[in-house]
Image 1 (cartoon, one colour):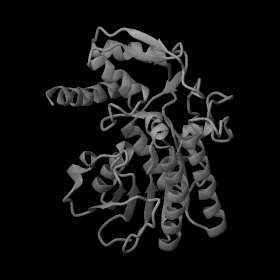
Image 2 (tube, rainbow, N blue to C red):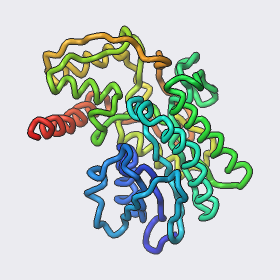
Image 3 (tube, rainbow, N blue to C red):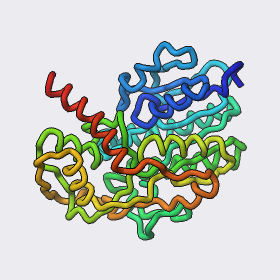
Length: 321
């Protein structure tokens, strides 16, 4: 372990929304942090405030190529991947490659460095679920050849590969299944419901709801998610663990909530539901509560206000440009 620090950690996709918040947590927590990103969907802006800190280093690299890190490593967080439908539908092959080849490279690195690796899986491994809420023992209902399959199956393969390295090579592995998360540093154009609704509301546009809006989502504020991941990394639990907020809301009610908080005059319009779009999404967090002593603390109203204030700056900057 690095002298004077709590450990040396590599965060792939560390310039992305979640990765950059994790980088903050570990830098501020006294770890020696290396962020690796190729800026496919991440942004230098997300880590600009960390540049120059003595316990932070950035490496511009695509993890589907050979990954080399000099010196020891105690931990690896694999968060490199397009993560929103608009991204993985635009970059289907890169999404499959980072989930398969990228995961293989990083598991090999973890084995060589004797590092503990935590991989970012997703609630999308449950597909359009036939059980509700979703618990970790559920195997999912995924269309492997549908347009969303490139992301869903990349993550399912990632989990299988990770467990194989754990069982066959004895690598210390952790798997987090992340449910819908929001907060500052999300991209306005990433296509997910929250930034799409907020962006439309702040620009005074109509808000687009797909289907009849009865489909549900559960939104977790990013600080809560980071705390859950931190606890899972330092736990001794190797099976997948759901981290998310079980406070479920319909997409239509969520759109109305955004209109109310932003004070916009936006109307709600309806469009056809995309293929294989999940009808429900709610985590069963029994394991996170019992194994990690974790549950979300930030109320959606408070988290949304912080996030909307962040997006106001982004929308204003676009108008100024």
